[in-house]
Length: 330
Ligand code: GAL
Image (cartoon, rainbow, N blue to C red):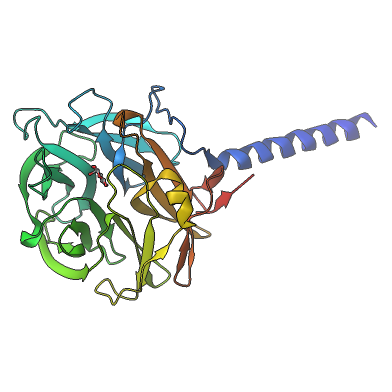
């Protein structure tokens, strides 16, 4: 009897271990709360974007925790291999350094691309003066992903006003910006071969929206954006098209409009291509206008496909970064 019992016990222990490992493989996300980094400090990567290098995800965003003037922020960088546990890599662009552009300028919504030809990391951001009248994009570059980015220039892309920007890399590797041109709407434009300038307009979507982001999923392009209500949340909308150049469908709500996107505003649609499936994660900012550094994040897997995109009600969810499976609820 005894050997049988111990074999049974061993099998049981093994099963428990396997269950624990399986649970560990899927990271759980809580929403709208403080999100501590490896130092135990709330992540400062607002209005941000994500770049994957090898197996590591790098999250760049507005570091609003520095007690600078409300306009100013540095660009922070965090690294993770599971999208849940983030290590602070440092502020990679110092807004107030004299070699950069000075403390009276606004920097918002930084996004970093990797150019495989020049092997440079190229950062774009909304750059503006204190009255939001410069309406330009700024560009900074670096040889390493989380190094010291050097500010290069700022300009109006293709001569147009540009405030909120979003980044998009298509399946063929082409890099695009989506930017808000206040008098006209969303513009999608292709970057030059070295990514240092905005070369060619692909489309104007004549809707007055901001917080623009794009994803290509199962043969369709999806664009998302918010209305223009500053730091206050509003119902975010999406549209679809077979080609980036359009024609784009009419815009529809991603959630019941009375929920105001559960307090969040879109900043990126993150595609996770796993071994079993592909998930698309809505990355949103829950802004706190009175204390921007206390702004929170709403990240949720979208229900997406067949031309529909729905943001589920906030609840705990988990992601298996290897298989790409996102599970919402318990
Ligand atoms: C928001 C925009 C933010 C910031 C803010 C200023 O609508 O998305 O990035 O510019 O307005 O009021």
